[in-house]
Length: 340
Image (cartoon, rainbow, N blue to C red):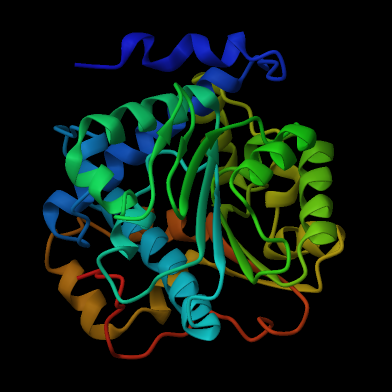
């Protein structure tokens, strides 16, 4: 059973949220990404005991798609794990455009713990996520502890150290208000995560958001996964495919090269940034792990996967000097976030 109207009316009833023409198409990208992640998990690309609560994937995706999502998940988690080790858990995670991401629940199954975990997305999306969490004791049990309570509204959920809230990231007053509700600590080391989020935000709104974060937080890392090299023929095909679904990439000007990706942060007051295309990210994964997942499915030929990898990237930006050495290199030991 789906939630009534999947929360669709909630966003329109929020006086501070003004829908843009492409918002519904952008919201739909969460369903696509979640379906793909669920499909890859079912095939054994990585372990995720929680994605199945949010997605009932039946359709099998192409091997190139599965490998692409493996590299995406692995790349982001390598950065998260290095950040957690560096801070010994005395930190916050803020997941922007979180969708149905399950990182909080997977972290609860590891020795890694954080002071606060905050997730933000369109109210339409968070309404569905709240509904699913509320209906499943296995999820609620990860949020609830003996000392704390879980407070729920149609679009927001607050636990002792987990906060899921509906917000328009283009409205900074609203973002600030929501973070205050989540008891954010601007002095605590914080890692921001965004997977294909900034590219859907108009350039000026994106600059405002990144400048605001740089001004408010003392020590932070931003891990951004999204498109790159979008000014070639393959990029045009990707753009046209998204436009045919009613989804324009409002921030595509920052996705022309690895340099424009890093400049987006440097120009907004961040101390520094570096970026890698997904060919480099995939190559940084241990050879034993790459060999394991390459045995799961055969590729007819690798040209399409190479092109996909060349058109997505991972960016790490930082505030201050504490995290300027955070990169994508990985030891032979497997990630303790259970990508196995």
